[in-house]
Amino acid sequence: MRDELLNLLAHELGEIHIWEEECPGVLYLSVLPTIDCGGEYYAVTEHAPISQEVRAMGRRLGDAPVLVCQIGAEDGAWAAVEYEILRYKTMHGLPLPERTSLRDSALYGAELRPDYFGAYPVPFLTPWGYTLRHRLLDNGVYWIETEQCMEVLAVCYPVWDGDLSDGLQKVGQRLEMEGEQGYIYFLKESACIAVWELLQIHPALISTGLIRKPELMNAIWEYQPDYALGYNAQEQAGLHDVLGLLLYALGAEDRELEGSPQDMISITPDVGTNFIGFWR
Image (cartoon, rainbow, N blue to C red):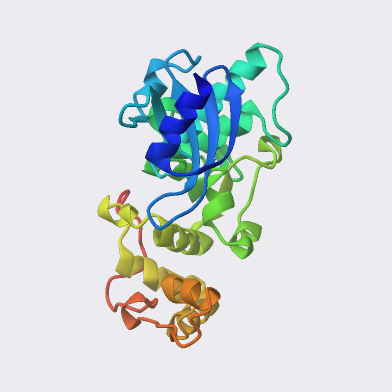
């Protein structure tokens, strides 16, 4: 039966290089890369100890009696499958893979599937006192007013771990009680850079209407002019040209890196530096 299932999966996904049973009825698959396919997948059979909620996230492959989730896909279904695999092992006293934990799985999964894991909670305490009011900018990203009447940007782990530069992470403040995997906090003078870097990865933040980009760029020039100068120099040199850098790494040395004046940090007169569109 398993050979038959693997043959069906190979027919749909491509040549399977490695397969392992992660828990009863859940297979990990490594598919050799081709032009049309490749990558890593979880395949969930009908008898696997995976909830119906997670099964609804997967996709069915032709005649194969399984649901598949591509690992690393933006829909995050794989993160929910991975969590339930680790949960099964924990509940049955089975060893977990090295450097994995149920907590870390849920922590990272919440960024991709807040509908399943729940959204990241609002921090109740900041380095400038307790949180009195807050507004959600994105899952795990909050603008906070504290009891000291300070306005603070709070970014949760793993959002800041994956989306903010190392230099900026050193500027932000943390609470010792939250440990290494807690929130990182920024006052307005450095929050402008944090919001700018988040926008590069989460451009949909602009569509919320809560962040005003002209005021944001003005704030960067006002509070962090060295950052604006450095960023614009990198943009002018094409160092933000992701496609160009990728092609160059693959050997296309004749492909020149391109920068865009529209993507540089500019100054807009007469709009100020209040880049958050509420509490005015």
